[in-house]
Length: 367
Image (cartoon, rainbow, N blue to C red; front, side, top):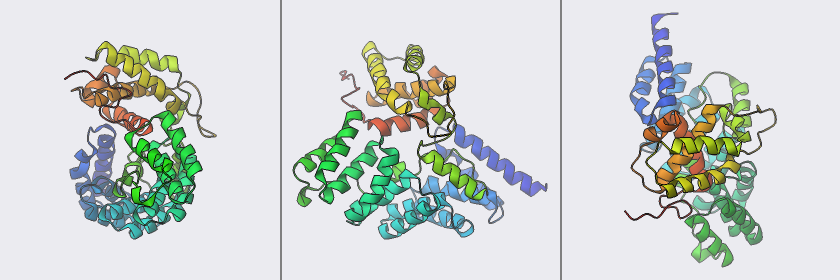
């Protein structure tokens, strides 16, 4: 192997290592820019760097991110992540018809991905006013990711717009049983009023749909493996990720409670906050214990996996109650990586629609 090739592969390994452990993934931006300069155009390393640059830049600089995504698609025109990221860029730029077309391309390569289907349906409904076209895509997303409050709200909104009020209320009621939010309450009031057009408040503006569109984006290395990798991603989309997360679906509540209680003793939380953490943990068990997809590994989850969930639950109380603790400080009490805590907390926050000061879990202490 020549020195140049060895240098680019080593830099890529360094980036992958950093992404898995970084508190802020944007810390790797300088390394990614360096890899783009060093790697040969069209090489695995070049595509890897451009894709991750696109995903990291999409919020702050969607125009530059779109250029990176296009470089990937020039060599891999069937790459679903490339198309989905380009769609996010165009959404942020307000080019909604372009974004819809890009999501169609992404779904052609990854038809079982519920997040792509959600984002496409949401854009059709809210940005382009095509609720009838949106319902089918949002139904597909809801069937695979009905545990997501955001997906349920988008689906209920589109159903309301096309006059299917009974179905919309049922979808929203199921979501609110898992955890209500101000958004859900406002949407329910609108549906109960008959979904009048003059009082229509979409669940969220078109731009933020990126929040669930790139879930798990840093977990799989980018390789030239064609259909096998896409098929694996399709299978994993229904359970969000593979490996450790699928093993966690058989989460024993008593095991989680024990790990959570031990970790809480090392955190500066009062008795009420610890009680709220245990209550939140009980609400989270159903989500993390969902049945695995056919062929997934079974058995007791690994100890680090359970501790990651417990750390995320503890940090959720920190987040809700505005406790001045960092993710790193909470992660240390459970002996897990910050990246692992951050990933679990992201899932938990989306599933329970957590907000700072959330009435379900905040202790309402005077500050």
